[in-house]
Length: 109
Length: 116
Image (cartoon, rainbow over the protein chains, first blue to last red):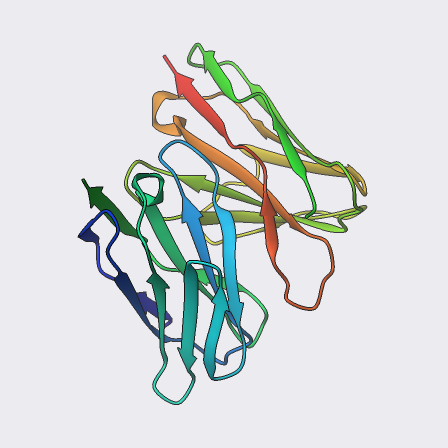
């Protein structure tokens, strides 16, 4: 079966750095997405990785290793507004998006 | 980026009534739109893929007669929850891709349905 694993919840301090991991087992791979979702709102796009390596976009970076079925989202200089759920999603061989359950990130002052 | 608008944001209805949710792509044409539902503290669950001009493709376990999807134009898809019951109360979200190579999905604002 297809499976995406990410931690349920993480806590970090304002100004610090946090890494949210995502491991996946899917039938084929056509890209990995990270989305941010604030409570009661729809998800918003953060990043897309299809090749191995690190993609940096401001305070957020996303890493992919296809051979390990592994990705992480790195958030730097954490701000209170970064408190949200972070969803990892993988596009499989049929170009279907498989969603992880999301990681709830709690930022403390 | 591309914009997807969803309406209504909130709806409360009585058990047994039907509710229609609209999803519009405002600045691009979407031949395919996706409908998700999300229960509290859970991830997105794909309900169906809406294709312009043809029947929707429903995921396993989703009742097509209960969740009617119509994709009448390249910018509008509707989801109708028929004979709603309290267990249908959920957050319904639509999304669409603008055809870019990344396949990035743009999401509507979501519609929170509460069935009394």
